Image 1 (cartoon, rainbow, N blue to C red):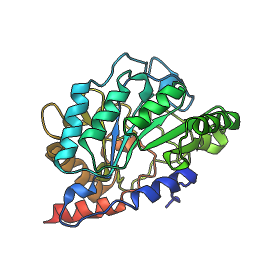
Image 2 (cartoon, helix red, strand yellow; image 1 turned 90 degrees about the horizontal axis):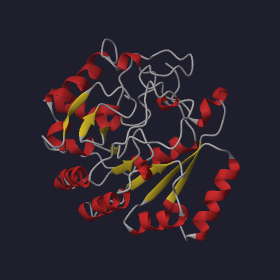
Image 3 (tube, rainbow, N blue to C red; image 1 turned 90 degrees about the vertical axis):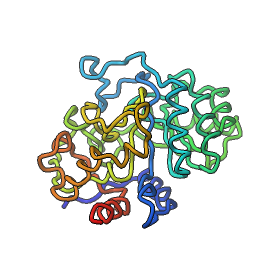
Image 4 (cartoon, helix red, strand yellow; image 1 turned 60 degrees about the vertical axis):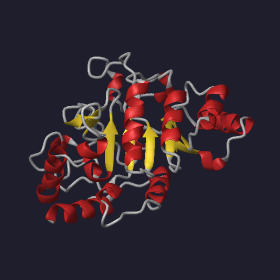
Amino acid sequence: MDSKPTNEFIEFRKNIFDTFKIEEDNIMSALQIIDVNVTEICTRKCVFCPRVDKNIYPNRNLHMSLETCEKLANDLADFDYKNQVVFAGFSEPLANKKIFEIVKTFRDKLKHNNNISITTNGDLLKDDTLKRLLDNGLNLLKMSLYDGPEQEERFLEQFDRCNVRPDQYVIKRFWYGPEEEYGMSGISNRVGMMKLNDREVPIRPCYMSFNSSFIDWNGDVLLCTHNWRKDVKFGNIHKNSLKDIWLSEAAKTMRQHHILNGRKGKSPCTDCEVHGQVYGEDSFKLFKKYYER
């Protein structure tokens, strides 16, 4: 079996997951991360991203509405969700002009959640933007930097200027070349949409559908953060609650296939080369027991 990918950010993320408590009698505790795609616009076209080719994945002027945002936040509040919420998805979240209201909505609805974060390339992160995000209740900025060490220095100066504490940001250094997987240990091929290395697709189960949920701009609940095809949808939060979708037959069918057969014979997972077991083992074990009852 190939080794699990690791780098500084993966270890940082593991430490966050380690703070989340799995409760044997509460299947919803398996849900450790909500990834929210608030827009379909990005300011960049990175060579390792499907957006590099507009014929494969073009920018589209589509944005999550406040109505969808409030529905999702209410659904999470209904089961007192305290684990990670990250505005990231397939885009640059600051391109949604309502991002401040979106952050505030989650903060107001999830008063006991201290894990509200945003992943940004920083292109649109002005001083006022930074201050408003934090004032509206954002806990953590995850900076995905692609230009080199000088870009990191520029943002560190900005954080110092705006009195941002070191525990309010983390730097992800993605300015390396292809031989170093651009700094992304275990870089994703986006379920076969990109050819970035020569790794074989593993057969083992992937834990992503056991510990994470991906919410698209329109409320669709997608398979995971790697499925840029968007060809597997478990439901839509405007039709059912997130909890009902998380525990739906569609989600169960996917998870049970992974439990019994791994990725073998299950599209699009058969095309995905991510390790799949870096995070989420406790959630996987909890669901396995849950389905055996």
